[in-house]
Amino acid sequence: RGEGTSVRAGGDRSGYGKLGLHDPLFSISFRNGKILFEDLVARREFEVTPKWKPQRRGLNGCVVRFFGGWFTVENLSYGGVSISSGLPGTTTLDEMQNYRPIPAKGRALILKNGAVRYE
Image 1: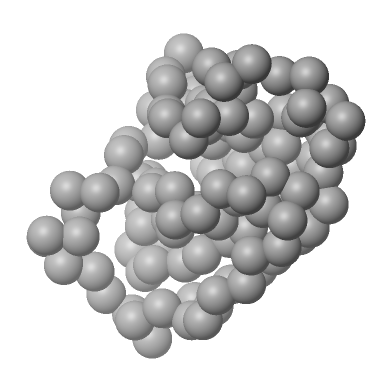
Image 2 (image 1 turned 90 degrees about the vertical axis):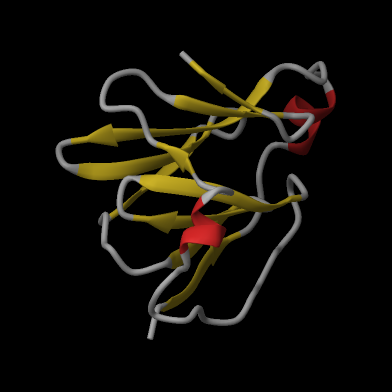
């Protein structure tokens, strides 16, 4: 079986309201062999151990599914709580087309409009 969900709710709603549609909300990168998932508005972060087993993680209304060094955004509702069920222990090649790589250097940014940009 895959891993269930870890959810942290909250965020900085007033800071969120001041952002434009193309401003970044979240960052996903590597740090010391772990995946770093950051809320750039509320300045909260936590680490995820990369595994070749699907795992969902939620932070301040952003739910991301990680699989090894890849990710896909499942839900974005900043400041809300998103709870979802556990995952199957594998993923298919068809599902992999929805995943994006986590860069070895730099980071992936999840923007307010839900798009992903790399820097």
